[in-house]
Length: 494
Image 1 (cartoon, rainbow, N blue to C red):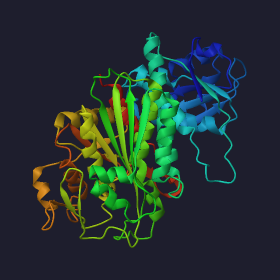
Image 2: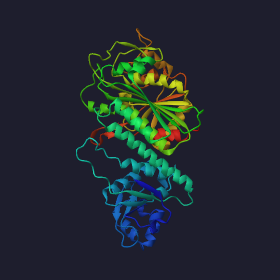
Image 3: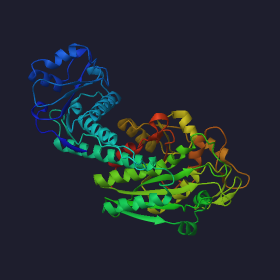
Image 4: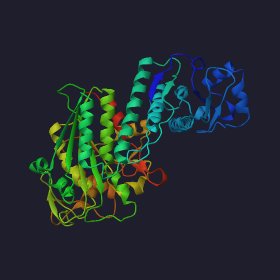
């Protein structure tokens, strides 16, 4: 999709569709009022019929008798004094959905002009472009009949009066990059496990680096990982014919001497549970167990596209967890790269086993901060459903920063405690640590496990088991938490 900033007034530009807001009780937004004046009160007469209530997300097409717009899409925006970020996003998505159902090839969007209680015009524009670009995604890679592309090809966006043009351009650029990053993550997440293998993820990273001069990629194979002592990671891939890969992507946008910000993604391309086999119901959704890796690749796509002036390193621990005669068994003890030994009580708690070696590996980069992203625990789903990612960190300032950004981006996260009292649940009679802590506090004990491998840097953990994909009729990857990760990196300095 092509996005531009509108240079003229909305009524002066010829377009297939002009998108304008309507408040409750028949009140027109400022752009709608200007158009109504040009149409001699035509919009007010339509609104007076009650065919559009003004409720957030309500839509109605109008075909005006005059003017340069072939059609006008009225979008309900609620009460003028009560429009906040979530309602705005809902209105934007309703408009996008209606646009995609039409034959309009281009559109003028005025919604970024709306006064939002808790956001500015740059945020409104960036969110509009992000949601529009993300909505263009359709999955058809493994279908014999490809899906028809939407008719809409270009969107011109108006901005609030007096808005800084440079800031608006940056907002548009960011929204497009984040939308592209989300779509990258969605595509990888949606691919079946027989296509999206560890090798496929490695190939994707290599192609991404070939596309952007600021990126370099290194792929470590199992022999190289074995030399590094990554016995924990390799214990997960032991039962599969698919070789594990450690994928390292470096983005160099800052000074050579600047320490990088590091992202670590869990990339279990299919998770059967191993010898601790999962129940059969919905096991197909375990292809989504690499969505942490997908979100990291999506974030690096956005970072490279935006040209951020910082250094970023992404490390993806990719493996397939399968049961076989060579698979790791419950009760086995393995040695991690850190030297800590791990008693594997449940082979279905494999994500932490690949992550712990990756978290040790990233020490060599002397990172400013490290965030790991993983579809780690069913307990996170039970706690937060599909709305909120679980956030845990021993550094409260870092946690507060990420929580604030999650609210700003509406890519929501909520903090769980990471207190030392939970560490005792991971005690083992036969190793330094057990890989599970029992049936209670599963998300917390999983993070407690990872914390033991992160002592040398500032670290946070995002459990996205509930937010990375949707089940049911809308089954598919969501592209989260790409917005949260990109915005965090956008705010950092070299």
